[in-house]
Length: 159
Image (cartoon, rainbow, N blue to C red; front, side, top):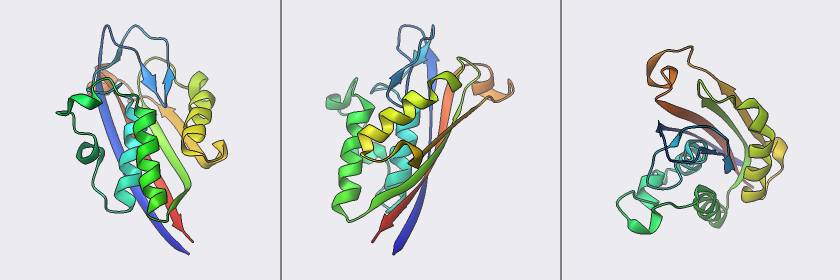
C-alpha cells in the first residue's frame, strides 16, 4: 500500500455583498468571501492538499483566476474535478482533516452539513472528514475579521 499526504491553505477577504460559502454550505452572515470563484476557502484548501499530495501543483494551475470560465464557479464542482484526477491516477482519499479560522460567524453549527456535503461530493463517508473551527483570538487580519482562513491535510492511498 502506498500512502501520500498533502497539506493546503487558503484565505479570502471578507466583504459585503457576497455570500459566505464554506465547505459548499451557505452560512448566514453579513459578509462573504471575495474571490474569482465562490471563494470557498475550505474547499480550496482541500483541493490544494489533494493536489500537493501527488505533486500536481495547486488549484491556480488548474483553475486560474485570470480565466473567465472560473468566474463565480462552484468550488464543489472544482473539487469533483480534482478528485477525478486523483482517482484517475489510482489514488483515493483515506481521510482529510481541516481547520477553519474565523472570528465570526460561529462555524460549529454548520460543521455536520459541511462534512455531509463534502463527503457526498468526494464520494467518501462523512467520518473520513474532520472539520474543526477556531478563532485567531483577535490577532492579525483574521482576528480583525478581515478574512477567513482554512487549513487542510489529506491522506491519499494507492492500493
